[in-house]
Length: 146
Image 1: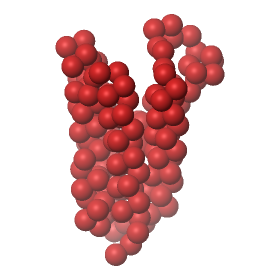
Image 2: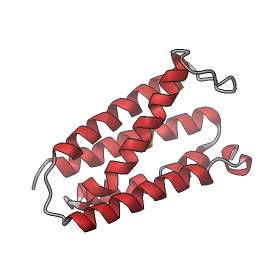
Image 3: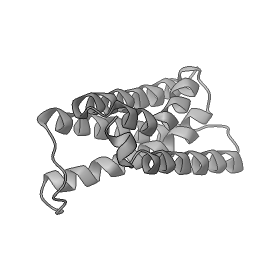
Image 4: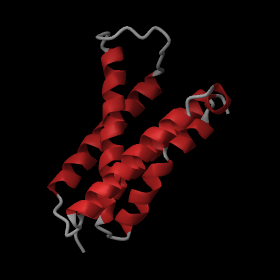
């Protein structure tokens, strides 16, 4: 069995754990649990060696890497978002998540699968939409502070 599925799954696990740490720090674990729901599928598929792990993980990894890049722009004071404040632990988690997302993305892009293009595209679109939807659902104050 190729090593790529397990590495992609491992990178998703690192993102998931880092988000839970942030949730514990901010007393909002429910929000982070909702946000990480799409990551569970590539984790399970990857540890089972399924090639669909790549296509389900790719959009999630891209979205989380983009999110971390936005946070880093704020931290480097290249953007002005006054309502954000991060503790040193949260900053460390953004670095860990960014490295995990970039690493997983690199592995996934290098990994060649036998999945047909239509199926691969459909799964990637589905998981991209699912990841964005979970981020939107997690924004209301009722979920944010639970």
